[in-house]
Length: 498
Ligand SMILES: O=P(O)(O)OC[C@H]1O[C@H](OP(=O)(O)OP(=O)(O)O)[C@H](O)[C@@H]1O
Ligand SMILES: NC(=O)CC[C@H](N)C(=O)O
Ligand SMILES: [Mg+2]
Image (cartoon, rainbow, N blue to C red; front, side, top):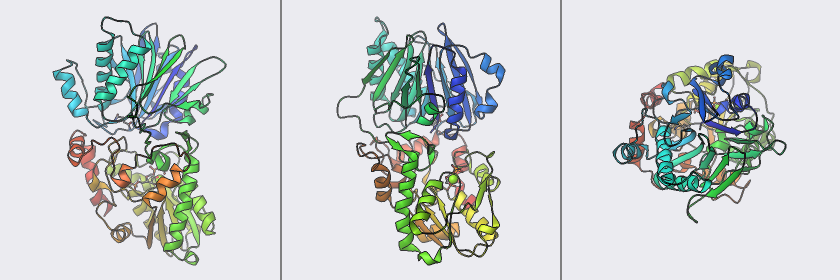
């Protein structure tokens, strides 16, 4: 889950893209980049780091033009440490294309071979996004050879991309001198939404509605699964469904609603905040059947993402909701940091307990999800250190048991605390007095009831069902083999836990 943004306007876009990226920073903390276009020329600046650190005034000054793209990266493929793999990516033929991608290509290895052997295209990094860009470039070249680039030819190229590429991809690209193209994979796994400003006719495309609202745009609609939108440089927009009828299914990633997205965003017709409240409500029922309510004195969220669920849960079980942990706002999100070592250290730097909320009390801690168990184990220990009597732990998401291959960095099952362990084994490992998880079906209902028109969710890390239908144990290990040493680091999560 990276954050992506694209703007077509009648005035300079550099500041607007910067502002939108800041609003999407929670989706990627590792690298960032902006590219703008002026007179068929691209101007780009990208580097490792957060938005505020990467773009200095001199960089912003060298990003002229009224159209542009930006990205914040959370690496899920290739090399997490490489500056080269920061986005946007650029190819010079045909036309000159720059592209940003949120998602993960599951057949990148096979495509890389095809690109080299059959399409005679060169890729220079281990990034799956560079592969995707080259497939798009090849298909654009093929459909426009001997004819002009029109919205129809662009859509034909996207249709060909859908046939070749597997996995998750929300994409925004700029074609030099022509316009901006956006498309979403046939399952709509990662989000992408669109806005047109009524006063000046400018367009913004972004991963989350919060980026639109925070920059003076208003959410018009989501890009549909399999759909492509092309906005020419005169500001005229065209759109088309690029997969054959019956082959597009709307299965957004449910983890967006649990953890990844900001609570003030609305994705695919669902308010993330409302989803988290609903998850708290269903979790409350499970808590009541597992722990006698009189045994709980206070409900304490593990900041940040669990707050709405914890609040709702507390109200339903009739217990006080208290802020027992204070988050250091200058430490980023720990889950999306690359490498288990840095994640583990960061939990202690990030959260500190207010002893008076714990002393002598039976506390129910609530988190949105337990993935590697890094956070839970540290937090339970911290609660005990400041004098908690009993420490119960509830998770608004069900046990994460399966690897994710669609853009969340949980590539190996061995690193997941719930993989191949019973509830009791997980409880012992985390060290809490009772452990209560959300149920998979209840989770799907809690979120899905907010938009019944969806065709279900990608909930693969919870139920092991991969919506693209082509993910096997073999392809998962192949994907891991393509990662840089970070995955090896992650595979050590077990030892880091104990
Ligand atoms: O079991 P783990 O592997 O530790 O991962 C799960 C934790 O990581 C996330 O928090 P994070 O600090 O990333 O972000 P937040 O501040 O938005 O909650 C999530 O909210 C859980 O607290
Ligand atoms: N989280 C993402 O969307 C990552 C995009 C791409 N797979 C990368 O690793 O750069
Ligand atoms: Mg958290």
